[in-house]
Image (tube, rainbow, N blue to C red; front, side, top):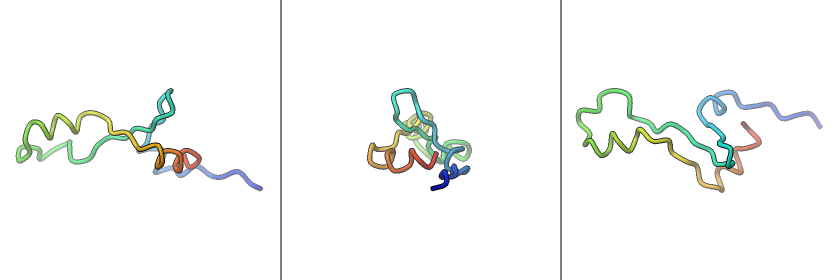
Length: 62
């Protein structure tokens, strides 16, 4: 059976940490944030983490 190809667009969005958890950059945090509360903007700066179920499904794609 041939090797599975890496899904390039997914690889550019998701990052695998040493612990095995998968992180991504949250959306809507770059510009036009004046309408949002400062709490919302602050929360978007941190990286989001995928659940274990989604992470296990996507690990062989990355």
